Image 1 (cartoon, helix red, strand yellow):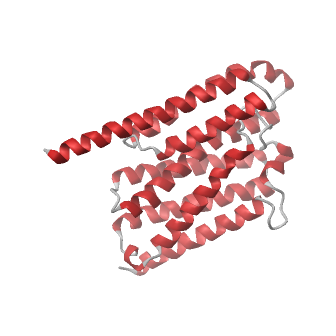
Image 2 (cartoon, helix red, strand yellow; image 1 turned 180 degrees about the vertical axis):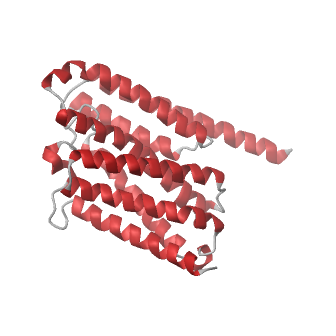
Length: 266
């Protein structure tokens, strides 16, 4: 146990507090403008063809509660000298800080700046989740609060990155772009499917990223099938991609579990 271990725990707590304050500003609780009304409404459900309906963002409550639980858990004395936390604690603190930076960029910066912030965030989450695969969890709490929460965070932000970039491109595009919106929307969703399956395969078919991505995709479908701008093609494709990602994760998890049981019996 070293002073650096205590510093890490304090940094994680500070990063969480910064993220929550930024989130409160982003929801208008401290007098700021709510996220959906920022940037001329570009980040709202009708801001682009790949924006999810507003209820999709309820997943942030789950992610924030999970990160709060992780922050408290990692601050316990017995986690101070944990080798896994020595690797992952700094990374998770970085993802929370970047989460807050995105909210600050959305509130006070430009739409292009939010794209930069979310791309850096999703890259950091990817690195963090990758490390959870190679640093085995020690018990169910570790698995849930580190692997599970990071997986949800990664899955949702991956999809949010697509929506954020689409909002930015829509804001700088011309009305003529609408003519090709269905085609490009379908192409992007196919790429999302490939990314989702890639994350699952690389992580041993962990289900948390798939749950978050499928959740967001379903709400993209709702927004396109029942809202504006309307697109039946994008809506149906989003449902198909959500089902494919989720089904692959469920099957992969079942196969992995069965293999582990067989190995234990031998």
